[in-house]
Length: 131
Image (cartoon, rainbow, N blue to C red; front, side, top):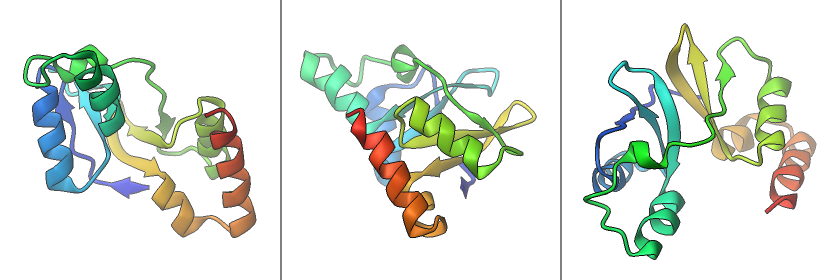
């Protein structure tokens, strides 16, 4: 897990989300509401496919408008549980929640650094098989 995630607020624009992704060197951001609770996740691909490609203005569309299908894992979850959630939902990034707050994000890079080769290969096969 990469700790210290920075959220984009749900009322901020996709333009700001893209700027923040560039500043942080990431391809995804958790979306948090005014209550500081996780509302979803947005990826650079979401911005391109669900906004720019549809002729929408990224300075006019908010991150919250694209917040759908929230999947997360508890901070005390096992590696197997996290992998299972990622595989079942065909996702490559998984927010980690503790006491109702986001504390980190599990990404493919984290898995590549920490899983044995055979387990990583199995995960990649299962997640990308649905693509």
